[in-house]
Length: 286
Image (tube, rainbow, N blue to C red):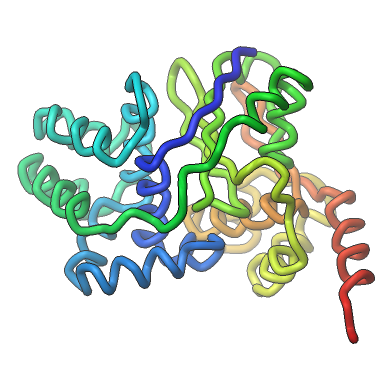
């Protein structure tokens, strides 16, 4: 497995855009509401609308070209990429090959998409705070090796043989406690919280404080399930369940196993419930 690490203000901006564009993910990201408030102050309803038109998957897909650029993955680099693409090429990137897309993005002309994307890039402010420092991640990669580092920065993600050959680990303060993954034909980009930031009691409480997520845990208590299984038994669409599953995984309560050519499998993570019990026991009452 080849593993590289990176970070940049452009990545932070894309993660903030993703959070504003999708209310479900905004509600479970640590900085989601702050990103939404900043967008509302900067551009009001028009900016919020434009972010939603591109949609969460669209913004995530810009991670690919940004992180392939040499040099800093800055907001300026992201703007340069958008400006350097033809309207058709940019539209195709945002749509993806076979992934989901908003209705507006699917029906708008490439010219309309380009104008909207550039308008958001000019209007959405950069998230507050500095770019994460990568020295600790690089040191851990040299010390523990790629497999161990992947397990530490993305707990609950388990990949079968041959699934991961080339991995780019990107640190972002905007995604805690969720890991964002972009699977490309030749590599996988995983955006993760800073190393060492494990799930807190607040994250665990948030994960459990929802009826749908409790129903998911009840289903997994009976045994491993695939996403189609959960969608059928819970009568819930895939897009709705994905952010719930991501939050439960980010809180350390479930595992996800990815095997080439097979459906992804979710299962309970007993260690996560042990951590929940220990955190609750240690909670200061006076």
